[in-house]
Length: 326
Image 1 (spheres, rainbow, N blue to C red):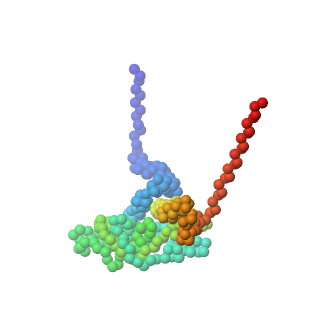
Image 2: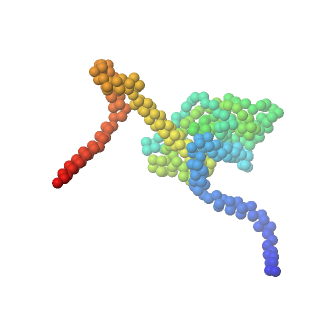
Image 3: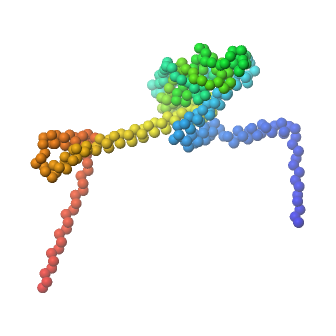
């Protein structure tokens, strides 16, 4: 019978026990890789579901909800009673006034604000308020909770909302604390956007590599990413636009081809009349000639490319004359 060797593990010191969570965290961060590598893996997954628009929209929501939670909790994590809140778009993506084209066009040139009403669904769309006062947030949460002094939560005139398309991210320019409380307390409803900005043309001109936002025309960096979540939202939105464009182009091409095929079909009366006149050409009238000439012109208009002439068949070789018997 073989011997059994018992190996006694060294007892972990108090210092090692304290540092163990930090070591585990560092190991996890190392396994995750750099922001650029993480973004590459995110986009690999996005490409797997790119043919399903709802799936890409859900991915944007996943990263948008992470941004929302970080914005909600920022003031709670700080030691000061107030925190400085920069321009929301700049905080999420890059400088609003950065030049994006060779001609020096900015976001306001490529995607001007549209002052028109647009519905915002509190459950579907990602609303990102940025509460800046611990006291105001505490007051809003207490008084808007069920049974609170302010009564049920409702939309207020000071709620100023800016809807960014196509990602459907909502920036808040007024009413940050009550909106935070309303969303956190699981209120639902439809709000009205004060401004709607369609960033589709901007997204086509700016890409993100996981470290910087870059202009596509010269690849110059226009800003370092604020978070991996913002970078993911931007690049998934680029993929959504590209996928939708390809799908639209393909659908349009198929429809045009079908319409052309239908146009090129001769109408039944012409076909029937042509069959009769082939057998009895003496019955052709001036009207018949005009209709068939018009048909030939339509064919030429729909298909202007000249037809290749059919290859000429070689003349059959003459059979050799039979030899006479002597």
